[in-house]
Length: 273
Image (cartoon, rainbow, N blue to C red; front, side, top):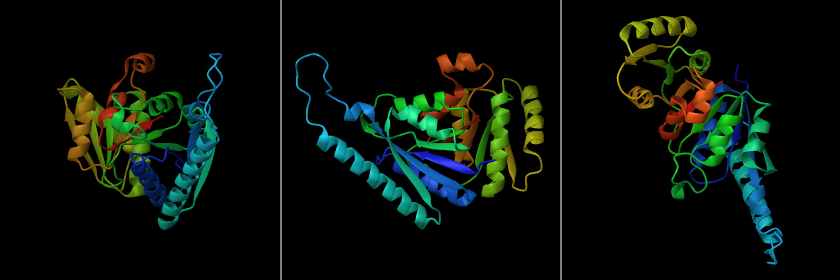
């Protein structure tokens, strides 16, 4: 049951859509929203004495700027939250960003973070190192919001019969019922017989939802591309997918369909745990 949400934010223009998404979600679910912004240790300690005989720069001005910027981000989120009818409690901390986010997320039910934050325009990878570290370290469901994503339309559930996708089905059921949005179930399978069996299973998991449930399946092509295409065709506002599939250790080191979906989806992706 989702009763509390943590929004991790960096204050960037690219990350503002994640702020708006989290506020909209908390408002519609009528749950508590906490916000967190982290002043990175590496920024405030740059130029520390390294035994090279080079004097470090004066950092007082930089530290003051970073604190003022973090406070301004908190003020913006609080004001936007009040406009949406909710109170947002915001905290500014210093440390290693991914560690602080994971630590604070332990006390909530859902973590929301922007995929495209500071330096997104200059990054060659498809996902930033902080976001990547957080979604691999946290044990909480994590909703990753790309720039331009909005909370509207059906909940798209990617189901492959794995333990992770069964957890995803539970989250999709809860969200669809509370948001009063349809569920679009996409099943990826190598043969039609297995797809039929998976649809039978997911129908049992979804139970007697009072919102429409639509289904689609495919046996050909890359799973991550098919999941995203199916969600876009359904006009979905988010994709719900298991954080790990059938082999968690293999996927951690080699990547997974879930990781590929997060990196490339134009829609928010909820990694279910």
